[in-house]
Structure formats: structure tokens, C-alpha cells
Length: 176
Image (cartoon, rainbow, N blue to C red; front, side):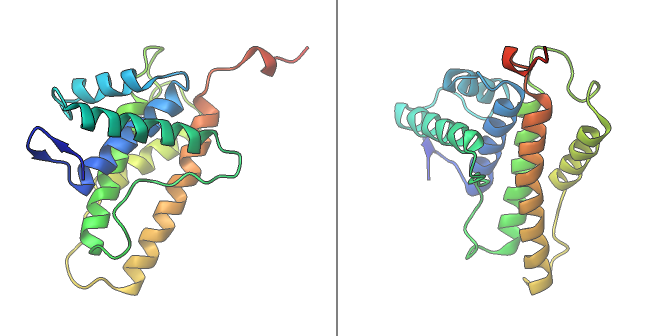
């Protein structure tokens, strides 16, 4: 795992950081790794990181960009492996959504939460609900595992939908 001057980046923190990167890139596709690092600092998620941590997070940001730009839909949320306890993966998924919303809301061009279509509004509401997700305790049942897989797939689709809905129109998109 990444270490920041003695502070361990657990899987939930890494998932949240990945969510920030994804939200930032959906909102502002031209963002750079420095923008991402500044946003993490402003969110108090990263304070004066060691060079190795900065480089690792920068690579994560660029991988995120490449996956979001991939026409093959190979985008994956950065979450703990399936072998980890369901509770840990659910917490990391909630943190990913929290980070995504923070990254999405970081743009300078108005409030995405007030100016979007009904479809975008519903997706944002779903993200907010998932960000508050908790397991009720108990065993890692197949039903809960299946639900988690479905939510992850839904978030992959929502990420691409939001990216397309919120990306600025390019000059090539104009009808003549």
C-alpha cells in the first residue's frame, strides 16, 4: 500500500482517492495529475506526501484517465480484491462514491448538482445513497456478494454516463 510519511493508505482511502480522480476527470476531462493532487490536499486527504506517494497517485490518476478514455469499457473501480471481507469492500465502495462526488463537485464552472438532467440527478442521488452504505453485520452471504457485484457494475455504467453528460461540448460536436 501507499504510505504517506508514516500514515498507511488503507484500501478505503485508496478507493476514495480513485473516486476523486474519476469524478474530477468526468467533470473536467483536461485535468492533470497536479490538479488531482491539489484537490486531494484541499480535501485533507493528502498532506505533503513523500515523492513515492505522489508518483503512485499520479500513476493511478493517469491509469484512471486511460480507462475512462478506453472505448472497450475496461474501466474498473479501485476496490479491495474479492478475497477481502465483504464489509471492507462495502466500506471501500462507499468511500469510492464519496470521493467521486467530491471530485465531481470540484469544478469551477457551476454546480453540477443543480444544473443537470433528471437522469444525472438520479445517478447523483444513487451515488449519495451508496456513499452512506453500511453492512448490517452478519455473514458474507452470496446474496450480499451478488448485490455488491451489481452495484459495482452499475457504478461503472453511471461513471461513463456522467462523463458523457457532463463533458464540455467540443467544436466537433456542433451541428451545421
